[in-house]
Length: 136
Ligand SMILES: CC(C)(COP(=O)(O)OP(=O)(O)OC[C@H]1O[C@@H](n2cnc3c(N)ncnc32)[C@H](O)[C@@H]1OP(=O)(O)O)[C@@H](O)C(=O)NCCC(=O)NCCS
Image (cartoon, rainbow, N blue to C red):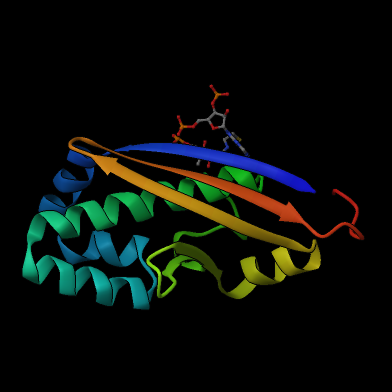
């Protein structure tokens, strides 16, 4: 059954401004090590693609935080929620650490979709719960 849904819209200009102010430190705070590598590679080829990558990850993580009902509160942290990619290009949520354990204990799994256009990036997340677990 559906446990929760979450959505988020992110202003790409704010992400660009934070990157200009704080540089890599800002990306390091939001991204997991694997995402950071991808961000670095994209930014090196075309800085604007890096900004957009970071903006979509930012919105996907916020949308996930809403779908599980935690908001940005423990065990939900930026770096515990990773947006990975299947060979087809489809994004997937990959969880780490205490957040992974929290979701596993509740039988939760997530589906994510991201989009961006000029000044905005947006994401939608659906969190599913295995039938045998009770909603907590
Ligand atoms: C959820 C959160 C990440 C969104 O922050 P944001 O990007 O500044 O704001 P957005 O406009 O994208 O989203 C706000 C909406 O998220 C929703 N939201 C807030 N907390 C939520 C939660 N725990 N779970 C799911 N959705 C939540 C609300 O509908 C809110 O809109 P509303 O206040 O008009 O009802 C942030 O509010 C958060 O981390 N909240 C929980 C912790 C917190 O700060 N609590 C403060 C009160 S003690």
